[in-house]
Structures are given as C-alpha cells and as structure tokens.
Image (tube, rainbow, N blue to C red):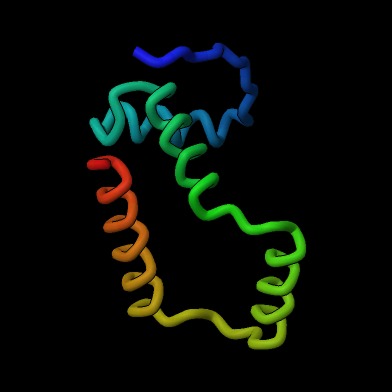
Length: 88
C-alpha cells in the first residue's frame, strides 16, 4: 500500500448532503473515496488561472445556454473519462 497522508477538510452542509447522497446510492464506498476521486479528476483537468480566464472570457462572449443534447454529450464524455481513469 502506498503512503498516504491524512488531511481535514470542511465543506458546507449542502455539499456534504450531496456527497452523502452519492455514497448512500452506492456510487462511492465512502466520503473519502469520493473526495479522492474528485481531487484526481481536478488534477487531471486542471487549467492554469490564465487558461481558465481565457475560457471564461470565451464563454462570456458567447453568452448562450448549452442545449440539453450538448449537456448530455458533455456528461457522457465526463462519465467515460471517469470510468477510464478508475480502470487504470
């Protein structure tokens, strides 16, 4: 087993309710598993603040709401990426 380090994190109650719902539904075995997976996902997709700012500017210029199909497609892509990352 690789070395781990314990950290304490505080979340707003609303986020904790969502985390607990995902754990209770069986999507994750524990709060810790969900949080570790969320951090892994963030680190895989992290953009520098400058890159994020450029993305925000582009979105602000478009000022459009994505269609339901676009949202579904994006969620499918995220789900597939998540499944691939868990299997590696």
